[in-house]
Amino acid sequence: MSTVKYVLSEDRIPKVWYNIQADLPEPAPPVLHPGTGPPIGPDDLAPLFPMQLIVQEVSTEKFIEIPDPVRDIYRQWRPTPLFRARRLEKALDTPARIYYKFEGISPVGSHKPNTAVAQAFYNKEEGVKRLATETGAGQWGSSLAMACAFFGLDCDVFMVRVSYEQKPYRRGLIEAFGASVTPSPSNKTNAGRAILAQDPDSRGSLGIAISEAVEVAASDPNTKYSLGSVLNHVLLHQTVIGQEALEQFEMADDYPDVVIACAGGGSNFAGLAFPFVGKNLRGEAGSRIVAVEPAACPTLTKGTYAYDFGDTAHLTPMVKMHTLGSSFMPPAIHAGGLRYHGMAPLVSHLFELGAIEATTVHQTDAFAAGIQFARAEGIIPAPESNHAVAQAITEALKCKEEGVSRSIVFNLSGHGHFDMQAYMDYAQNKLKDYDYPVEAVEAALAGLPNVDA
Image 1 (cartoon, rainbow, N blue to C red):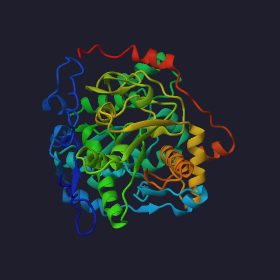
Image 2: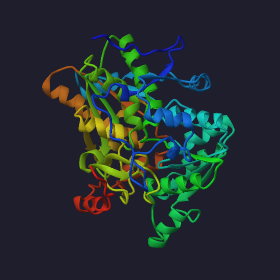
Image 3: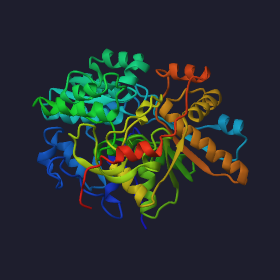
């Protein structure tokens, strides 16, 4: 079988995004209208997204060209480096070859600008004046704020209240780029007011913040909604990570036996993993692909594969995904970017097909791994990325036990320079581990929409 050669330019930055929908053995289930139930069409999404992103959402073309203005901005930090973690290997005394793709060199310190810049560009092209969005830990909010500043767009960010309080420097970064930041739930929207009426002390969730941002966008013809994960076009934009990694492994004369990334909504995981999953699906390789989620928010490992809303107020379309229920209220763990009730439909579909694996890591184990990595490699990982670090260490120690050498790569999706309070809390034994109880999952899942299979 002939292999697909990803197209990179002379500056080693991908010219195209890779669309895994072209290689799926069976298509993912359709997206359903939130009110009437049947599959949605482009007109249903037009109030929220520009048409070019809607086209990308449903496309089955293998490659979608990256616009030159987007690549020009990518050039500031892409291609990102693929490092060999030799000092970590030595510290673990493992025969494994450990690599990490470091997305923390972007201006905001994470992988999120890969899609933020693209989304801001397409909205600007369509004449949109303002974008509304949500953010958990703040990586997405700061990325979209930066992208909006580049393209002259206003930006409203609803930040999950617990992160708004935990991460003031992320909030400050968003504001420095000119965006407004509102702790969610808020009194600015009907969705926020309804939550506060039930629980005035609500710490918020990504589902609630999404409801508020969608409501703002739907009520203003000059405003569109922008999402940092979950949707197909968002995952598509992130595949620049894995495409670069494929070429970098070729340069290193190696290829990963195990590909690892943390998983919350799915963009981080898809960005690195999808190009490798594509090679597996085409019969060109046989890597194990592992998604790592927090034990406190076990979407793939404890959630149900079912149609559900992407937000708490049920304003978004219904997608088939692994979900803990749209009313899920996550505990206040520091991995804010992983506190979402649902997993991306494409990631969920691949999990159902057996094309990827999933596992969980506790919060304290994740931070212990992050500290071990930092002391060996000199980079403080973001709390989200620590989950991938922990699993990479587990895989490397398994190689040591078995006496075999495997190649392991993980996505170091961002640095933790704005998360040092979390590291200080860990050092002072203030962090708690949470196993999301089965009964709480069952209670949230009781509210799933009644959709005919």
